Every structure is written in structure tokens, then in C-alpha cells.
Length: 289
Ligand code: SF4
Image (cartoon, rainbow, N blue to C red; front, side):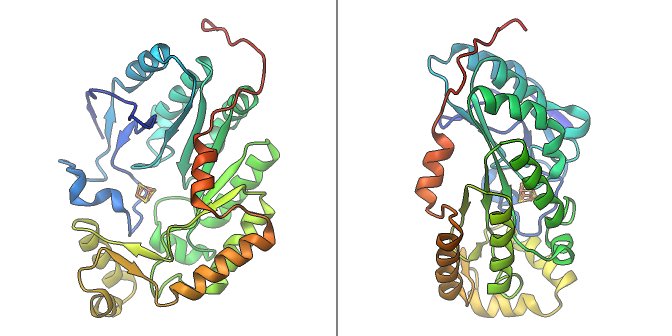
């Protein structure tokens, strides 16, 4: 871990990443692709040491409240968060200034901040986005080795439901010849239904690979799935998009099953929901509490 000085913290879409790099080790992670220009080892986390000062300054100067997002490039609840608590401090600022929050994670460490998330949601809006790729914990430990398996993420979704915090699930990536089965999609959607998940995002039943993450992914295939790399190369070459051979059937099933379960499955509608700021309570939040 090392510290860096950031020039700014909020993107034009009000997203932020307090850390650069990620400790979760997902074998397919796009964030390790070379196009992002990371100059250090992906697991050597860069902590933006002035992130909280920059965030407070941005929130104070914003004329209109809005949703603030985090988690698109690195998981806000990777192990380092347990000692540094940058995500929690950022959420406290979001609460203090009356903004809404949405974050993407694979970790049940999000429950460490349950009370704070609940307070944000009571006042404005807080949505937790959780990624689920496989219903099989053993497979999960191979493809997402350094984060809690799906069963614990499901427990976290249930606890968020009990706390009245809305959730959205990212059902991706779907890895060809690995987790691209109807049974897997069915089991994940059943969990989503039980946990009262508001919507499920899916960008196609497949995977994307670019320079940097492709080499890493193939090295992991060689280690855990002997012979599969040559099947990938034979099927996809150096393509960016790697749709599952079952893509059509899985997509049809996904939309039909979401309809049956009453889960929103239109990506545009889900992103509109995630971006839509709401103020629920009339309580004035003191800036000095
Ligand atoms: S949690 Fe997300 S950012 Fe972290 S390694 Fe996995 S895919 Fe990459």
C-alpha cells in the first residue's frame, strides 16, 4: 500500500474511487487492463490520501444534492478498508452534507457500515450494488479468491433488506464454459428474489478481455482450469467481447425469469434509478454534528 496525492475526487458523473488497485483478485478483473495506465502493481493499493479533503470541498461547493457513487474501479470494501476506513469517512461526509450514496461491492464488509448506510437512506437515498457471478461457493473461491463467497454476499443482501436499504445486483461477468449455465442464472435470480433485490444489471452473457487483464485471466485459467485457455483462444482469438456460446438462451431465460420474479432487468431503468436523488426526510442535517 502507498499513498498518492489526487488532483480531484469526483468525476463529472459524481463517481469516486478512494483507492486505486484492488485486493480481491478476481481472475477476470477489467480494472487491471493496461488502458487505465496504472503505474504500480494492481495489488499494491494506491490510497488517495487527500481524497476526503477533496470530497468535503466538492460536496460543500455543490449547488444541488445528488447521488455519489463509488466502486466502479476498485472495491470500496477490500481488506485495506478495515484499517483505513476511507469509505466509511466518505459516507459520513455524504451523510453530513445531505447527499445520497450508491456503492458497488462484492464484500460483506459493507455491513460494517450498515448503520451509517441506513441513516443515509433514511434521510435521502442509499443503494448497495452487489456483484454475484456464481451460485457455487467453491467456484467463487477460484474466480474471486480474496473476497467472501456468494453465500455470504447473499446473507449481506438479506441484512440490507432487513435494514430497508435497496439493493441492485450486477450479474456479470458470465465466463464462457465456466459459469454460463441456466442453473447458475436461475440460482442467482432466486437469491435476488429472496433478498428483495430491486434490479439486476446484465451487460450480456459473456466476458470482456483487454491487454493486461487477458494475460492475467489466461494465467489463472492455466492454473485452475487446465486446457481451457486453448478453447478460449480457439473460440475468440484476441476479441474484446467473448460471448458465451449459450448467450442467446441465457439472455432469454434471464429476462423471462426476472419478469416472473418481479425484478427490474432493464439496464437503462436501473441506472436512472441509481442516479435519481431523493430526499425523504424533512430533518435538517446539522453541518456541525
Ligand atoms: S472486486 Fe472488482 S475491482 Fe476488485 S478485483 Fe474484483 S472485479 Fe476487480
